[in-house]
Amino acid sequence: MASQKPHQDERLEIPDDATKVDLEGVLAKLVETGSVSAEEVNDLLDQMRTTTHGHLKSVAEVKEKQLSPEEQKALLGTLKSRFETNRKLHEKVQWADVEKALLAHPEKLWSLRQLEATGGEPDVIDEENGEYVFGDCSTESPSGRRNVIFDKEAQAYLEKHYPNEKCNGNAADMVAEYGADFMTEDQYRALQEKLTVDCHSWSFLKTHEDIRNSGRALGGSRDAGYVHVSLGSAYFHDDDGAFRASLRVLKA
Image 1 (cartoon, rainbow, N blue to C red):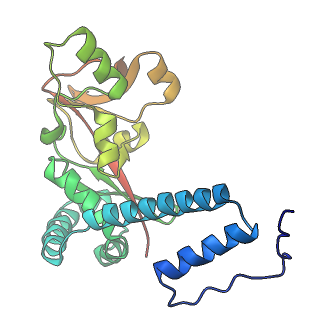
Image 2: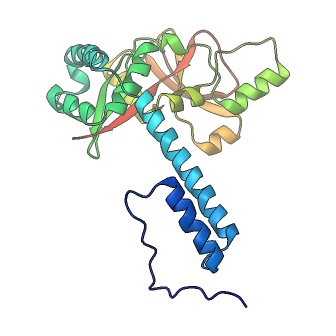
Image 3: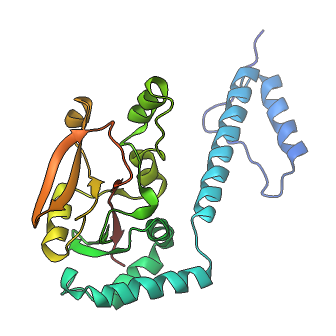
């Protein structure tokens, strides 16, 4: 005769100082009395292992994306100096407010350091929807990201069909790794109105999925004083091209 399951209002009390052996004993007792099946216990344990692993992995990733106090100070000094030099990009924004937002979201400082380290020279280019928007403001397309193809699909095609034609990775994976996004066409045009960039280079920009599915990607450059934002091949890459990124930081 099968054991009866306890009423739903009966609660399992587990002391806060319960040991692993205590918990194993409780679970074994539940199985013996028919309150739960062995399969249900195993499912629960699997869920606990998965959740714990995922949590620990998230904690590790967050910890990796934090700068030391010395690194924060050095980067903030660089950003502040550029911010004051490029006042025309953000005339109504105060550095103290930007710094406060960055310190409230230290993972954004990690992302900005990646943009800085690859030659992007990030600076505040907009303020909207309660956020500060940083963008790559280097005179030419960031030097540390040159000769990249647009995305993983394009890179895989290149490696399969043209194994001797080398690129330095793909822009979509790189910008995601930085915790940033591609600069949009509107952001790029607004930047070009205040700074002269990409006269001798070109930059991949954010591309709508429908356009990418056609095999193309958006790119920007400046030639003879005119700003050009046009569709080119997502499979194209050379030493003059990289990508421009943007990063949003919530106001503190």
